[in-house]
Amino acid sequence: MTRPLVVGMGGSLRTPSTSLTALCVAVEGAADAGAGTLVIDLKQLALPFYTSEHGVVPASARRLADTVQAADALLWSSPTYHGSVSGAFKNAVDWLALLADHDPPYLSNKPVGMLTTAGGVQGLQAINAMEFIVRSLRGWAVPLVFAVPRSSRVFAGDGRLTDQAVADQLRGLGAEVTRAALQFRAEGTCDYAQELSSGAVRDRGGRD
Image (cartoon, rainbow, N blue to C red; front, side, top):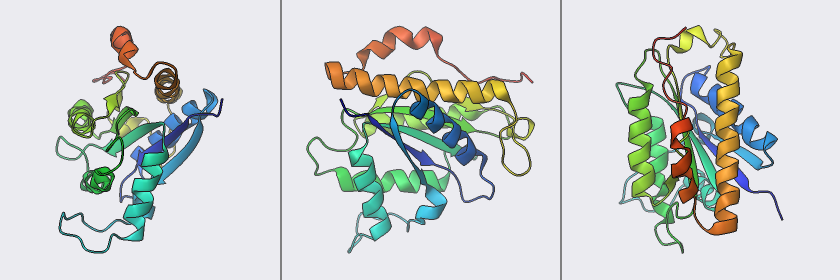
């Protein structure tokens, strides 16, 4: 059996991007669990603003859609801006409208793991926004999520992640997404995840 492909999508326009660092660590966890992996850095993708009236589809948007379509599962990462996902992340998700005419459409049969970074402690609000997006695109939200609060305490000035406990939890999220992808291959569903919700990693709140 070929390895499932887990695609990480996220980051921000900021340099360095803590949400991109966190995403890459989670993707490492997916690779360690046996997945083939790929990271889409939204800053490098440089997508134009989405409009439903677009004429010629830009190559970057088509590349994004084709990569997501090929994935067995996804890892999404965004900084938390004003209680929600970043504009860059939402714009990228809007371009997934290009998958509307696929069979099956959008993110059907794809588990999605979600993580955020936040300067404060409200990262779960962005996770909630991501969950609504996953549902609207017919994907499956993996119940194991991770919102990294007070990012200045766990990331160095150059963007490196310095907290080993956070790194372990992010890698655990990547591993869980890989397990979900394998479950989908074997059974055509990831309903099993509902039984694991009691073990979900949630916002660490104000803990140091």
